Every structure is written in structure tokens, then in C-alpha cells.
Image (tube, rainbow, N blue to C red):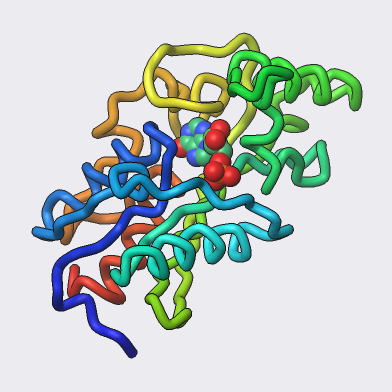
Length: 215
Ligand code: IMP
């Protein structure tokens, strides 16, 4: 197994929301964590059909290009009444004709799909955010850490915080959507603390325990 002793890692993402969250999560571990964007790397096409495949494509591309270990996250929202959609296509649902991303439109599209299947009651609007973190090395060796956060889809969207689909996701046991939560509430986690809330923080927690010697 390769080591991370060099304390240098590439965060294989161009997504500003994810990069902010990774910077918070990596903070306590004393790593130099530079993003693939900061290295000027192109965004690889996500041609996989699973979170694991797409996480590997991103992490391996960054590791190969930089010669450093790379950490990526492939994530998405899986809605039960939509047979797990948008799932690995969560970012694609936000794509507009001019190639930009519009998450207001993506949330609306999810809502229209829920209405089409008659999912009005909260009990029929359940789903989860999934994040798979891949740690890949320049020679192609890779490992995976998965985190999930269960919740309910609400409409209309609530809150201006976070990113992506946060305003329509109400995590189980809370009365605030991810879009109404501070960064600390959504993904704050420090070594030694009990379980984090968000899917990404939960996946990161597994990675930190396995690889960073965290409690
Ligand atoms: P990908 O991992 O680059 O394929 O993109 C995943 C997409 O899922 C993002 O563009 C977001 O729209 C959505 N997503 C993933 N994690 C979160 C989250 O924590 N909050 C809101 N949306 C998220």
C-alpha cells in the first residue's frame, strides 16, 4: 500500500462547493491540498455508470498528470421514487444549452419528476446524498470510501447556503435543509468527534480513519 507521508495531495475537483468542503475537512491534517483546477488540469469526462467509476476517472487523471496522490469525490442525489435518479447524473441534470450549470433548474426538474410519479407526501419523497471518495496513485492503485446521508426532498427550495441541490434536501432528524445549514453544521467534523452529517464528511471520515490515523 502506498503511503501519504509526503503530505501532498491533489484534490481532483473543479467544483467550488466541493473544494471548499474538502479544504475544511483536510484542514486539521496538515496536508498541502491543491486542487486539480489550481494545477490547470482539464476536467476529465465522467463516462462511468457508478460513483466509484467516476471517482476513479477523476482521481487517476489528476494523480497521473501530477505524479502525486489524488483524492476525488463523485457524488449525487438518489431519489427513491425516481428509481435512484438523478444518481450519477446529478450534475448533468443541471446542464443548460449553453454548457453552464443551473441548479435552480436541476432542482425544478427533480420536483417535476416527483410530481409526475405523484410523490406528494414526505414519505414518498425520500432519498439520499451519496459521496464516493477515491484515493488514487500515479501507478493506478486506488481505494474507495463511501458516505451517505438520508433525507427527504422538500419543495420549494429553502436556504441560500451550500451548493448544488442543498436547498431541497432535508436530512433525517433535522428541521433545516442543507441549504439552511452553516458549513459547520453540514459537514463540520474534527478528528475524534462522533459521526458527521453530510455524505462527503462521512466518506471523508472513513478515509481519515483508514489513512490519516484519525480517531
Ligand atoms: P459530480 O460528483 O461532479 O458528478 O457532481 C455531483 C453533483 O451532485 C454536484 O454537481 C451537485 O449538484 C450534487 N451534489 C453533490 N454533493 C452535494 C452536496 O453536498 N450538496 C448539494 N449538491 C451536491
